Image (cartoon, rainbow, N blue to C red; front, side, top):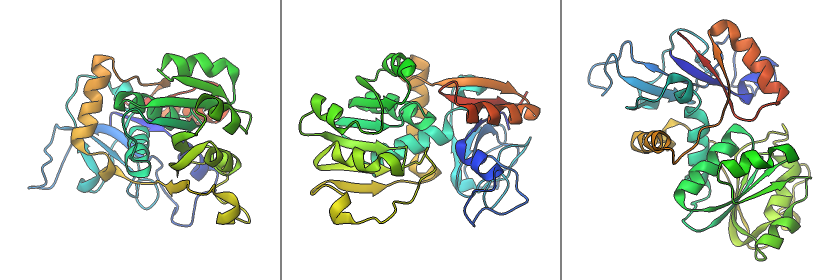
Length: 293
């Protein structure tokens, strides 16, 4: 293990709020980057190789990345080649996989389409904005805090918006027919408004619930979803981020075309508690990364 990001889902598990498929005792951590120590013969992996791993049962059904070593299925290991430092690499696997999978499998986003990101200063929201810009989309992204508008603009967001819970009118002031695609990361409280901001035959993908509201109470499709607007969901794994795509993203970072938002870097496993506390406090947008020396 060389580095790993700390995630909201791990905080949720620590609090005892995970679904029934999470079993104890368990080493937390849904993602990591590091160096192969040992691998099965004929599997395409070799000792000394730089790799990333994520999801696929890590931290839920088998031990995860908050450790010096972890053992994961070879199928969810992504080899890469780069000279980027470990503190940057540790921020990437889960947020890039979730962002890329949401934009491609969830939304089928195309060049020149308009994308609304709800929860834009979350780690996935920040990643989705930079990847979407790299794909050639026009990006609208939201934050509840006015002081973070410039952060979004600096990442290349075309239209940063302060989110008061109802922004559909503001979005349609920019794009009267509505946006082509909406990425919902806040969850239940804002999903209906995101749907209202989306054009007929546009798509909204429900990927996250920063609000911790995953269930829509008394949901009635006819009264909830605008006629002609499509709604999907995303929650994939490592297979949705092919090695070729991940390596392409790493080259874009090295070239300065793709930006990585790291909130803070922590040194050693003993600082995981501080990383989780800072993540919960939410004072700095971006990824909290633990590096093991």
